[in-house]
Length: 52
Image 1 (tube, helix red, strand yellow):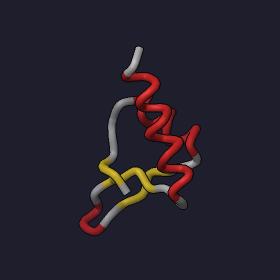
Image 2 (cartoon, one colour):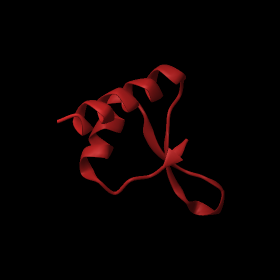
Image 3 (cartoon, helix red, strand yellow):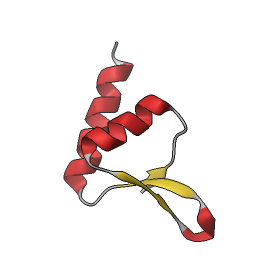
């Protein structure tokens, strides 16, 4: 889990990677990944955008 972002492109990358938005204890929204591969894909997509 990582903190949820309100940025629509971060949310798009989350969906492309196969992750989802979930709620942690206390009702805090977070980006959640089922496995390490999904997380790594999200990070790769984010880095590609930052490199532009």
